[in-house]
Length: 304
Ligand code: FE2
Image (cartoon, rainbow, N blue to C red):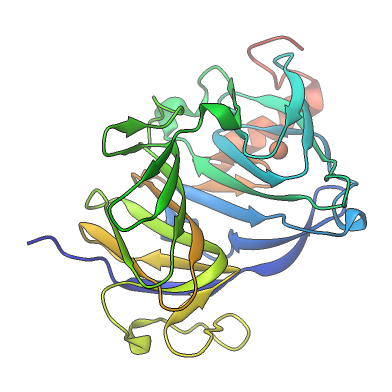
């Protein structure tokens, strides 16, 4: 019988300042990177304060990992060393594989009301792919299929497959599944997930119970301020749920709907040497990357 995944940990995203002074909330990126393997970081950059985001993320390098940017409102202007220039608009996704090296900038512009909403996820690459040729995929909102399931949930499929509907991002080593799920009130949404894969949900609207039972004691507390559950086991905006292993996840709503990212990926299981935007396996490789940046030999492939 299929085993439902239980909650391993609930984390409240934490206020962080990044780039040239962007105020955001970080849900993944603290503590040992093994916990979320193959994912390294999840930033929630929803803001209605242009002062909090407009300094943006000017030209900076990446190597050995992927960044996945999903915009809900407002726009992010970007440019990179492969020669890509453009705008990530509401509903669009940018899936950037840094591989051997990319230098890019990401400048949030917001919408006319000043709102800039979105998320950036970092996924690691295995040693065999860290120095692959960099790859950029810009996916427009219109290319992202939307599926309705039996529970009445609406699922935007960015990567992975729901029933027979496959998302536009394929051919990634860690087999990520990236879904934007909205569940109406008073139903249970369930979804099979490959056993052994890391699975998390990040709630950004409404509230729901995650996991098979109302059992607040299955959560792992991490000290004051880190662990903040509203009421019983209903998990709401700004909280991340990391699931334990199993075959499926279940999400049950009560009076409110819920909207969340549901993300899974195959763990890489390799050592992580990480400094800023560069993620390698060894300190030696990190040192080399920073020496190459210094020497101007960092970019291995693509237009300068
Ligand atoms: Fe970046």
